[in-house]
Figure (cartoon, rainbow, N blue to C red):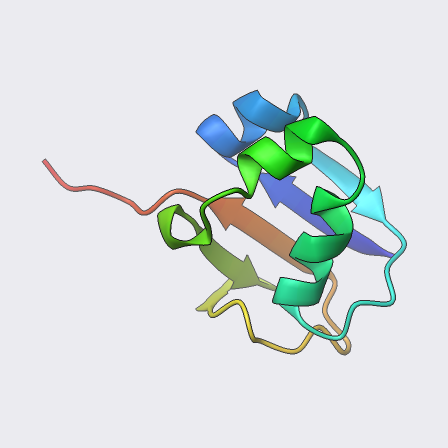
Length: 82
């Protein structure tokens, strides 16, 4: 099981702040594909990966990052200053 956290507009589109997911995905990108296949709201949230950042176990990483041993994945829009 892995905890998946959603922040900002990602959370708004999916309608959940977090959920526990049983996954066999080897990478973050594979996890995203599993989520997108679930329902339209996930498809909408992950439609443009260039508009998203991801962290695995609270470490900022890329979508090709491995999930082996990971306990948490968080998706959020890029942070803006100002």
